[in-house]
Structure formats: C-alpha cells, structure tokens
Length: 412
Image 1 (spheres, rainbow, N blue to C red):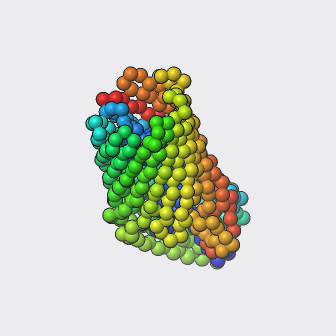
Image 2: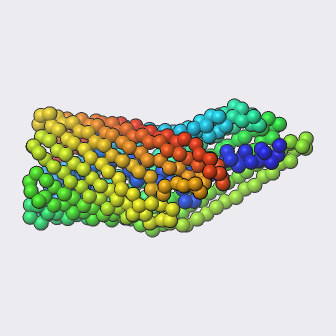
Image 3: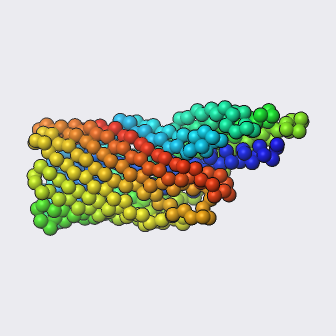
C-alpha cells in the first residue's frame, strides 16, 4: 500500500510540477500571441504591421507612426480576459480544470506628430495570467479518499518606452521603439492527499520570479502606390536580470503498516538563470480598394533561441469597413501555434502540444476629436498533454479564452 500510494502521489503531484519547473515558469511560454494589443489592431486579429498609423504602432511597427494624422492619446482595456484549460480525466476519472481571469488595461500611448517626425511613449501588457483556485476531489481513485488543491498565482509582463519614426518622402518611413521589459511572477500552492487507510501527504510551494530586460523593435513601412502599403518589423527581447526563489515543504504520514511514520522535508531553490527569447520578424500588407474598406494580413516568424523550442510562423488577417464617416466595424482571424516540436513515440511528461486559433470583432464610434471601441476576441484549441513522469500516456487537452475589449482615444 505504501509504495502504491507514493506512486500515486508522485503522479498527482507532477501535475503541479509541470507548471513550476525552472524552464516552464511562464504561464504559457509555448505561445506568443496570447493577448492582442490596441483597438483597431486587436479587433482585426492583430494584423497591423502595414498600418500602425496611431500610437498602437509603437508596439506593432514604429515606422507607421510617421503617418499619424496628428497628436493623439489612446488607451485600451481588456475588460475581461478569461482563460480555461481542461485536462480530460487527469485526476482519476475526473477532469483537471485550470482557469485564469484578469482585468487589465493592456495599452496606453501618447503620440506627438511633427512634419517628418513622430514621437511616442507607450505602455503595453502583452501577457497577464491570474489564477485563484480551490479544487476538492472526493474519491478520485480507489485508494484516495480526498485530493485537495489550492492554487493562487499571478504572472504579468509589462513593456514601456519611447518610439521615434521618420518619413523619407511620402512613401517610405523607418521607426524604432526601445521597451523596458518587466515581468512579475508569484505562485502559492497547497496540496493535500488523504488515502483510504488514513495516510496523508501535504505539499506547499511558494514561488517568486522577477525579470528585467530590454526589447528594441525596428520597423520599416513602404507604400509603392496609394492603395497598397507593406511593412516589416524585427525585435528580440534580452534579459538583463532574472531572480527566482522557490520554497517547498513536504509532509507525509504513512500508517499503512499500523504504525504512524511521519516524514517532513523543506527546501529552498534560488536561481539567476536568464531565459532566451526568440528573434521575431513580422511582415504585413494592407490594401485599400475603396476609401471605406481595408484588408490587411500579417506573417509573424519566430526563430527559437532555446533548445527544445521550434521555429514557427503565425498568420493573421483582418478587414475594416466604414458604415459611414462616424461608424466602423472590423473582423479578424489569427493563429497562435505552439513553439514546441512535434511529439513522437518517445515524448514524455511534462509536455503539452496545443495549437490555438482565434477570431475577433469590433465596433468603433468616432466623433470630431475622439473615438470609442468595443469588441471581443475568442480563441480555441485542442491537443494532448503528457502529465505523468516517465510515461507516454496522454490526456486530451482543450483551451479556450474570451476577451472583452474596451478602448478610447482622443486627438490632442
């Protein structure tokens, strides 16, 4: 009984360790397009490299802000960003469900326009995951009476910094953004398992991580003729500092032999290891067949910088249509592919393989000096998860998210 219970405990506790290993602390570091930024851009699937003619361009392609029509102030808030991940029959015959819900204003920008120059300062939140869960499973397996899990975590990344762009004639511009990147991660976890013979095991973890770095972004935009614009941007984040601390305590009481045998262990882990970020190349094209209609498409290529990651290409496209001069609607589609290599027969835990697809919609009302945008972004994907140590056994994995967008901008 003792060995069987310990094996069961190791399998169940691995569900926890999947998220806590030093190389996988990020809430979702296998995908790059977890949150869309801005008002027009977000509601067109994030396809904005060849447009970028407002302060949101500081993030997508700083060259585009050279064509801004004037000074502006803009801000957007994801009123609700809700994420749900389901591992089918992961704890006995029951599903393991992880949910994240955040209320984060994810963009703010101020743009100053001159004749051939534009300057901008922007604040961006490209990643925000907040989990607060208390899960209780009664009799998930024949040898387990109670399995309880309490998880509280926050993982938020911030970008902030200046941008500058310059026009060369009416058809060509270049731009540069220099972001300071800051990430704050914390997680507290409590787990309790009680077997049918009265033995129990308790584990507690407290994890904290801070990262500081820079992310320069260089952009180019060119209009070969009035109806068509193409753009390109390149960026790569570099960490200057990384500080991780993990405290783990474990307590076990085994009485399967009729004698209570307690075991207690405590451990602290510190690390200054810096993760590496991919080189990101983005290309975009926008086409204006009429003054009231726009089509746009982007390609985002990520060249992996770490072992165990794959190069990927994401795609996005969108359209914008003005019903009249003061009302516009937008649609968008995009992909968010995993950067993990394709699994094979030798793949073992911890591993999740999941490709995500998304759609967006938005409506904007314009006045003489301001605009108001509301919209929604939905994503969904399904794949497989390898959860148990040393095993090739998989569980079905699904993930979906819903983001409600609210944003406003004003001409200065």
